[in-house]
Image (cartoon, rainbow, N blue to C red; front, side, top):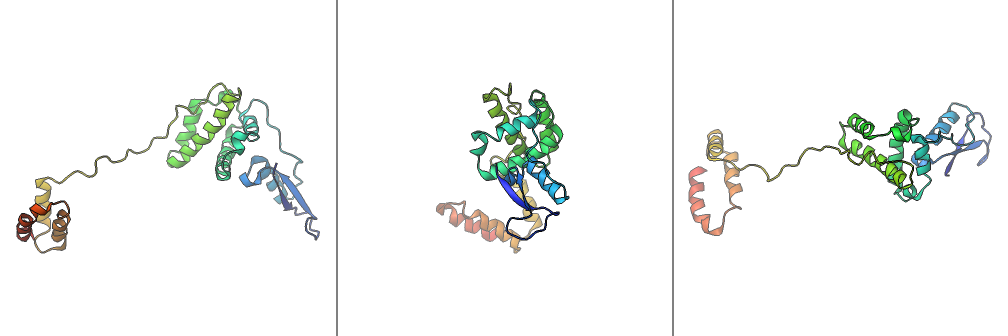
Amino acid sequence: MAKLLVRAPWQRSKGSHQGRLRLAGIHGGLSPEFMAAYEATLQGKQPQGGPAKATRGTLEWLFQLYRQTTAWTDLAQSTRYKREKIMMRVLETAGHQPVSAINEASVIKGRERRAATPASAQAFIDTLHGLFKWAVKSKLAASDPTLNVKVETKPKRKGGYPPWTDEDMAKFEARWPRGTRERYCLISSAIPACGLGTLPSLAVSMSAMV
């Protein structure tokens, strides 16, 4: 368990380590127990000696077990940092809930609360998926409630922009008469699409249009 030295406000003695406390918790990931001890220290309170033990069978209990496994520690540090921040917010409201109560409907509600930012919604689902994927393999959860929950994204444009019709060309030519920069740009853009054999006839057409 990683620890961090913090100078307590009620202890101001000199020295490299005097008057400092070691706070338990994964401070690199801002774990719930570390943040609780850190806030208590800032308020001048004596922090508890160790992290509070969650009630067995709850979501918080499951996450505490998960953080002690290689399924968690093998993740990149940046990934653990992001997912722990997400779980801290989740545990604030659902940490006391039984693992069996975390179903697909509750995951969908969490996704919808983050619908304004699809990347946040996806990160939320990925975080819970990692937790429950391990929990199912460890026989601590009956199923993964995230399996059928997807983040809807706007479909990408297929086939490029629609080509102009003769009517579109007529409208453009009426708006931008000969000699204008816009009219010249239109003609110039058509040159790369033409083969060498069509250049003579194109030159005649351009002279009439420009």
